[in-house]
Image 1 (cartoon, rainbow, N blue to C red):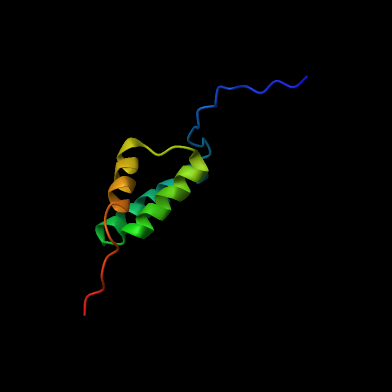
Image 2: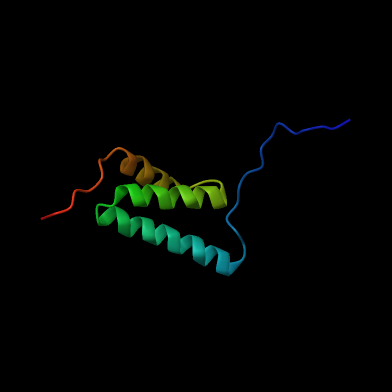
Length: 77
C-alpha cells in the first residue's frame, strides 16, 4: 500500500552559496527590468525564481503582480 502525504513541503531557499547567488542575480535583473519599464520581462524572471525555489518573497510577489497589471513598455521614437 502506498501512502501519499497531503501536506506539501515548504519550499526553501537553497543553501549552496553559488545557487543562492544565481537566484539573487535573477531578482536583481527583475528589479532592473521593472525600473526600465520592461515589466513583462521582470514578471518572467520572477516566474523563473518561483519555479526554482517554489515561492517568492513578499516584495517580489507584489512586484510581479504589479508588472502583470501594466501594459508592456512602448518604444520611444
